[in-house]
Amino acid sequence: MYKFVALLFCSNIFMTFAWYGHLKNMNHRPLWMAIVVSWLIAFLEYCFQVPANRMGHGMLTFGQLKVVQEVITMCVFAGFALLYMKVPLSKNFLFAFLCLIGAVYFIFKDMPAA
Image (cartoon, rainbow, N blue to C red):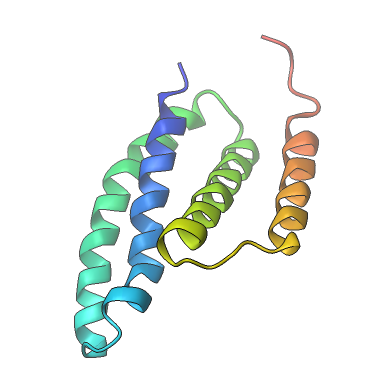
């Protein structure tokens, strides 16, 4: 039923690598090369993102879909920062995530029960 959530996770993994992966493993390459590689990775992201948004739009409102996307983005980014970039998570990540939980609460608050 919520296959779009799995697709959003996949798309976010690709987009996070497209946006930030070059900072770790292409630091000594020309900028144009990092841009081209990032665009190729971003193409894969869109192959997951577009179907996910089309599926999710029928189940959630536009605002709800965006908030779900942002929560997934934060989860993927935190994992990427910790596991791939080896950046320890600070308490500010926790506070930001708590704010997103508040966003989820408010955007889904008036949703009728299924």
